[in-house]
Image (cartoon, rainbow, N blue to C red):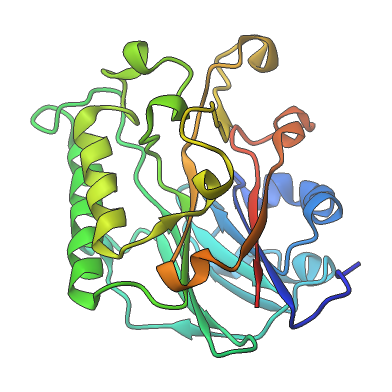
Length: 275
């Protein structure tokens, strides 16, 4: 059921669902656990004509926007709150590969701009000269950074998604062992930090969890026992504009979701704002 404080709080969750059609039964588990007003999905892997609109509306989200393609990528915004889709945001790297969706949420105090991103993973080799996927990742973040810088400091805005970079030392299970692994290499960390700085974004998760504490949102499928080994990474992020930082009231990282049947390798993350 929707929480009982409409107009006073705003709960925004983000989840790399890793196939919306395969994992749509898990959405009810997420709603029961987090009760979000808005849920941003990444890696929906679903062409628009096959997006499960009616089933998602039945979860209490009457307002839905989605951009998808067969087998890869895809983003969606599911909302209890009316919004307007931003149609003029860039086509990153001119690929048309469904990695970003922006909306303006109709909330008290004026619209909140919300961006849902799925940054390229970058492949296995952290060398743009030999790995086109890594080059694409760096180019994507560079374009997003330039666009953000041109727009100026973010105002009444939230940026969420699977950014596929774990920037801080304790965003990975071993800083030393991960320095040469895609997602935590110095060039990626520098790129993501520049993007964040360009919009003067505030790291909403680290607002609540000090940088010296471990914080993960992703655990590999390759681990025989992901929970016992706990070799995680923080790949999923929530950034808020500086003018919303003081409105942050709580956060949640739904770690039990990693153990759900047919789980995604990412877990849902949520923040709550006082409006």
